[in-house]
Image (tube, rainbow, N blue to C red; front, side):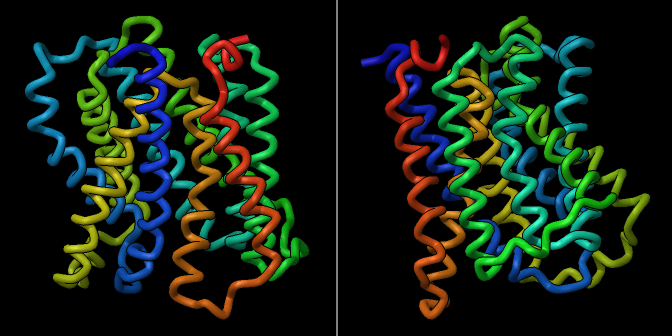
Amino acid sequence: MSGPGTARLRAHLGMLLWAAFVGLSFPAVGLLSEGLPPLLLTAMRFTVAAVALVPLAWRQSDAWPAAGTLALYGAMGLCLAGFFGTMFWAAHRITALSMATLFVSVPLLAYCLGRLLAVEQRAGRLLAILALGALGALGLAWAENGGDFTGMRIGLGEVGFFLGCVASALYPVLTKWGLAHGRLPRQAGLRTFWSLAAGALLIGLMGVVWESPAALLRLRLADLGLVIYLGLFSSAMTFFLQQRATATLTPGAVTAYSYLVPFVSMIVLFIQHPARISWTWMPGSVLVVLAIVLLLLQSPDAADN
């Protein structure tokens, strides 16, 4: 059987898998050797991901993208570069708690930007679900910080990372806008390839300017294996799943699955360090899971009215 309902279910299930891949990528990133240039490593990840998608993109492509489509891919790549660039810049200036708290804004930003570009309909139920998920994600950030929010402050680093969050939220919105206006192809693999290729180029340029390419000489064989793994699963697969879901779901609904990422990371943390389990994780976990369940149960009509 096939139809809109089946497509929506596949999109939701794909985003559940997306959350698992992204959540499991953080422990893998922690295994990389210290002192390696993060922007250049990200460019390498995106390059691996783009190369892996070449056969799929080749089969799905019938011509070179038009100039307007290439410009849109460039804007999407700029969104990726803006998020990862500000993330690595802010990592040395603000606390992990501040970054986790600010990242909670991405789904709500995606909804608002989607409304601005007319790819999101007025949806009070969806907005309530996003707010519930944001509250749950804040609860997980609070638990991760030992039940304390006193480390939060607003400074230049926080403002910079928030702008990066805006760029992250804009990525699925631009995808939805491009699909709605016939500027982007319907094939998810093709869109994923070109946006990752553009992102790899732009992030690589940022890395060459801001970092020392010579630092890549410290890359060990184990590090190279991790970069390839992250490129295939944490970049190629996750962006493909996101692109496929964006064709069916709204940007707000797609980005809402980012609330599950800290939940997956929490499970990994408990497996590695059972002593970290405490009641402080319960409120945020319940709210996040409830928000995702409500999102899964939401009917198309409820999302579009």
